[in-house]
Length: 355
Image (tube, rainbow, N blue to C red; front, side):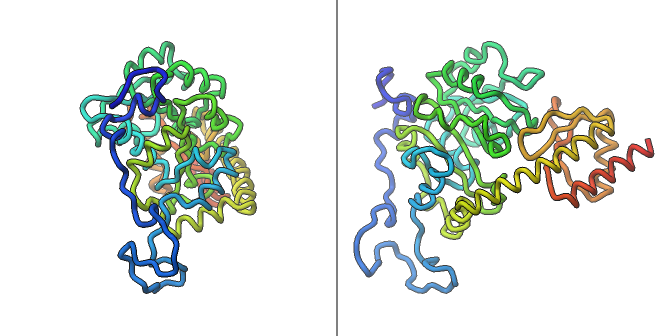
């Protein structure tokens, strides 16, 4: 049974009680075994694809992929779970720790919408707190999260592109020792110095989310990582799907995490920053209020956002607008290729000329 003793690991204190007594499903691959003839998983013996072993179930947590990400992230392999993008990691945390119609999460808006949507789909309460005008944590936030089991902080934040310094994030983790503080670092490769992954050994209530969708250019592969201390990892492994990482995804992810893959990613991050600077200058010249970009996108505020939206549509350019009242006059632009940036610059200069 769950105990409230402060000597009990935080995962056991906050977990859904029934999960502590749950015997996790052991797929054929997790059970493993030794032998030359494998007939324990009801698989077909026919491989009809050029990709080797595609007729076999993949490992639940491929050691080669976990080790590759451990080497890249400088986080020990026993603190890493790989899953179908950071979005699945969000749901795994909610499923592991939040009792439907009883528990709640907290987040600071405007921010990534899937924290709240995932909570709602599981009938979990949401404490929505507002970031300050400078998009920092509000005063007395630790008291305002109340009894939230999970507190989500996106850093760099989506959609604002703003960032909180490492000391601020660490202070927030320390200020909420009775909650699991989830730092979503989906865009961290664009501001690597702000990562708090190295704080995992220090804070048992810290979870860091990562993805290969952004800087690693693998959005279509759906490969993410949840990093936490082993008591949290053990609980996540009780609710994860039997085979969360398809074999082709594992292979492209490992290639991306090779020395050459990481070097390519870093080159592309710098190239995208160049395009971001070009776009920022053009938007500022146009008269938009532009927030500093710490991810691979920029958020701009316009006096006549409808006029800009119409111009974008006529130019065949799809950017991101928002229904949130705080973002109603803003549009988010992802950094893209030089040709795409040229097209945006031309559009805004033409629009300014006809003002």
